[in-house]
Length: 490
Image (cartoon, one colour):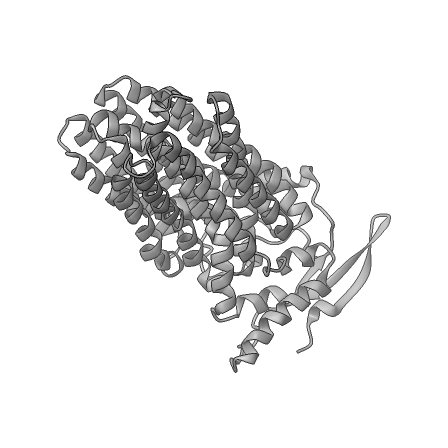
């Protein structure tokens, strides 16, 4: 089939001539049925969330071992600081690598960030004091933050529009498979009958490095995003990638539906100036920026405040031995994984605006109720775990939808940097403040003090629900170029 991407010509623009061409490649990607290609893409790239879940859970599950370590001797405040340091690395890594992802390409960056993650998490296992532990946690976070920007962009740009919501939420939900792996690893490696806490917590961080090496090989076959190639004056390469994907269908005897959408007219560019980036984010799309900021800030505080100190609540208020914390993480992880998996389809069917605001609102209300019961001492450790399972069934879908929102509601040329900017603002405000505040509240030893933190997290989620209900974008089943017009569109 002839591709309009070949219809290319020069047009004057100021003192220079730029290539302008018509292309139907985005529409051809959106019409594709789900296939083995998409499944492999999701596994190879989506496993980033598994790594993040592994890292966060390990940090929480080994908290007791880190406090008991004769080498590190961390306090509760140090544990909270380590969580904040990891988030700070993720924030700065997202900004740096997000900018590079839009300039250099998706594929290059998801290899660079994975290399950084593997090296840093392996180095964490050899920490010899608080300063070295914090440094390696910072670098690990930088790798994960960079992964979020590169991976979210790539997955969004390859996934057909009608599957985008469910796929994105399910992939984000795999964070909790990593959480379960981290919990199981901690249970085994911290058990004195197997390895013991001092060697065990070091081996726990080695799990992430080994998984990272496996992922590295899984990604070798993934091509560059055709959408990114198109706007960077490489339409021929983009066309070859799309035709190779289509050839896979025809080889299996699958007839592809006709392209319905008209072709796009694009002006090629090599990069987007930072002035145009920020003008687009905060002037042209300032309402969308408000929505993205609200969603990411609320979920970052909600999640990081509670989950980074999850083990401390169990050990300090329920007297759970540190080596047994992992058993309580497993049901918590199950609730978090099932939320996006079971609710994800509704984000494409019922719609983004209703489902995002509903999951945020329910998460906030349920946390406020469980927080009150906790403060009154009315919950046993099992009942507290069940309460968290129910709360985060909805909160996990809500948090995943925040990343979906910022990834699909801004133009192609700045997608990775948009993800990075809102991730940085939201996570910086909610993710760094949350663990530090909750670490101090737990140190007070007063349940009533911890309730104040829970109520703050609940209020932020309810406020974000209101912002989404009022100004959220109905992006379900729409092409990315329809949701956000490309800056280079002629």
